[in-house]
Image 1: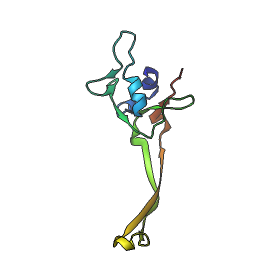
Image 2: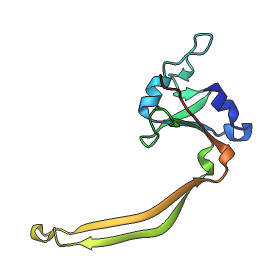
Image 3: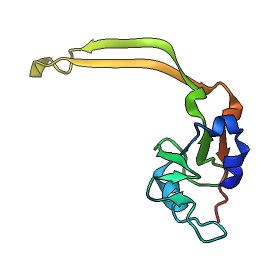
Image 4: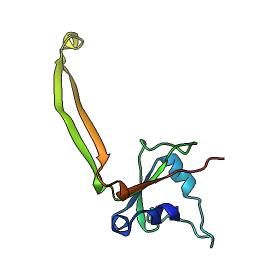
Length: 125
């Protein structure tokens, strides 16, 4: 964990956050440093003073996966590829005197500064 934290440049550590899924968070809550102190501050949900956020979209710890990310996610941009499209659906809902709607949009995302966010691969035994 310390290697990941220190691998991010100081200017990106300033606003850095940790992201992982609930399963990985549960495993990391029990990790201790060499002096026996927990890495995870249970009072404030921080690691090395930086907030921890959980996302169901982060992978679980498995061989080849990258289940923990740390960095400044303000450099992650979400781009709207196609505008929101809405279509009225009446066929299935007519008998119940209802109207259904189908909506979709196409989004894309990427990190604009790759050095702002780093990931950690956990070795699974």
